[in-house]
Image (cartoon, rainbow, N blue to C red; front, top):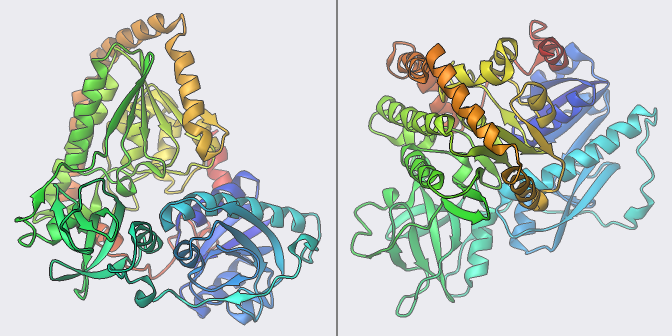
Length: 569
């Protein structure tokens, strides 16, 4: 079918649905719902068989839903309605939640139900739930609805199992609903309130006399005797500790309130000059190493997958230490939500010199990528439970093997960040693993890809078709089998020989210098595109139009992704 995705932005769920529909053979295009006129124009241009709305912030124009079948993906169970469904579910400590695919009508979130899924709620942030449970449920329900329509059933299915559902509409969550009452709320309640505001908008509070939004909270195991709930207890390199009624919480990031253009930054940076008299504690460890027999596992769940200069250097030291252990395989697990998204753009944006910070960051991540490539003592595996983007994809490909969970989305391109050239030694890695033609497709398409396409393009070695909760166990099983493979010694010897041959043909240093010469122009040159794109990304400046790379109906030059993919094959 010809399917138009109508969305507020190309967010993680919209990307996932885009990828799934293309893999199922549909012709898919995207339009950002900027205003009624733009949306109506897009439908007139494309004349879709179906419109799917994965992420909207306003009602679909009645002239559109009356003319075309429009299916809305709502992140709540049947009967639920409103713009903050998942926020309320977390705040109210719901044990179960769901996703509903419903038809757009004159009743907002009240049209006929075409499909739905339910799932148990996990103790997690809103963005983590949205990226995992909501995404999986949405894709499953959406595909069911599309399949029903494909079988020429133009009416919604009779979902008798719904029973008598009473519609329940709830408005947006206000800051008064999220506000922490430090004298009443226990630690679980504090964490739940911050989790429900994760990403946007945060929980507003007054900390050390500064009006801020709280982000990135976790339980702190510290002695709290003598402290009043809400009081600053201690600080670390980046995070602060606040006392609660029955314990304490770490707060990793703050955003100054009431300041135009403010962004989320490490808590200690926002409160500089106000906390130095408090006790200093070690920063909660982000990077952890664990061994199981002949396999070593490195976890690095960096917030939002951002790997700043310091994070890259810490991970490099941890990886180098892992290579000295008497193991045979090293598995790079990343984090459960993101493996890596490359450069820390917030850190760069907040630096006194964005160009210098960018240069330091790209060199730090290059150091890590080069060290992984040069490792011949172990087989190195990148195991992706969560998504990866930009330099994070190519950092993963620096390993000997890349294992990915089904459902992971990769964005292996830099061009949307102001035509950034990129590094991480991709000019060596992609031709080596994928060949020149596929390397060109990977870096030039500017489109998200699922693991099936990533495997066809040799970005991924193996796909693990398991649930998120079973991924690490399946990785451990496969890694242990790899470690005891009788041919492993031959494989390691082949790694040594290939590294010698590749170095003789063209040293890694040459690839790196060529890439960095292009990056230097991006950072320091006359063209400000990278700096403008980074600013817009960090400050969440909405796009004034849909990029032509996904709005295929507006630019036939790009065609459908299936055409691009077919050319690569």
